[in-house]
Image (cartoon, rainbow, N blue to C red):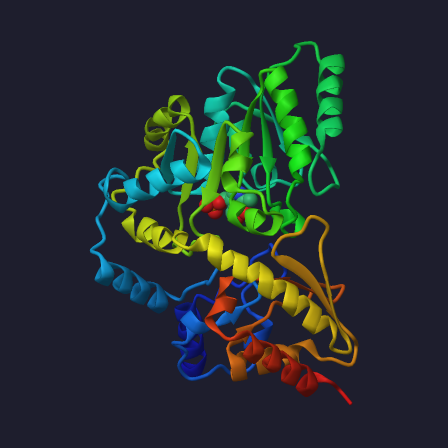
Length: 400
Ligand SMILES: Cc1ncc(COP(=O)(O)O)c(C=O)c1O
């Protein structure tokens, strides 16, 4: 019993109790942790994971990192979101996206919802991708809280294109008595529910041109936009230039405990602070999120450039191993799909990699596919060491 509790405490310490093995559903246990765990694991910081978009720091590693950050330069706290490192980060995000202003919000959900509300003004309809976070994962907040009706487009597709959107608008105009009411169009890129595929720039440009001609506003749910940028080669400011507002997460790969930035014209962003307060989101201090994100924002382009390079080598090298197949996703970013031949035991492989090399793997779907995500945890170790660990792991896991 005591052992079980220790194990639970240890997993909580490592932040592993919520590992998403069947992405994006959050599950409790990782395949790599089904057997015994090391007695004490303070190695989280140098842990390599092929599961997340970021480092997934344990509470201990998070505290250590904050200490290191404040050691090199004292962290300036914010006061109800104003000033300090939060303001500094807002300025950096405005510059990064080429927008007039940026504002910190406690969640991306709130950033998306407030952007849609403010951009849409008196209009009732908002076009959204059917598989988007806004449509599927924000508890119908647009409809129930903000009086906006979400029109899902692109059912069954990773993203919708201009023709899909025009068809949806035509259908509404022809079949509804009260015409139009459409004010805003949303794009999510990369697409979380499409294994990180990004919307091709040509599609973004076409939709943006149409929206300008028809006076529709545009919002980008760019929770992971740095990852799309690294893999597509399109700069964040170019992405942002097609949109009125852009949201970027502070925790997906900037390793904060939470938080979001919403960037746009001063006219919109200046209204957001009051809205955050109305919805109870004005937090006394947020420097522990913004200092962390600020730290990891520095040098991010170089780090992800390296991740892209390593991912190319690693996909090629792993595909050389008999029985291992890594497949790219069309317009894909950092996620690949791994399949192992029947003679390789995934559980054995995952346990070996975890115990011997502090490398974490995700669990397979019913179809035997493992989502294989590259992130900058890979940069904490020399590449030859990582590939060697894999080769050994596969041999150990091969049933002869
Ligand atoms: C694409 C996308 N948009 C928005 C969000 C919402 O972010 P938050 O958890 O900060 O509300 C997420 C989080 O999973 C996401 O993946």
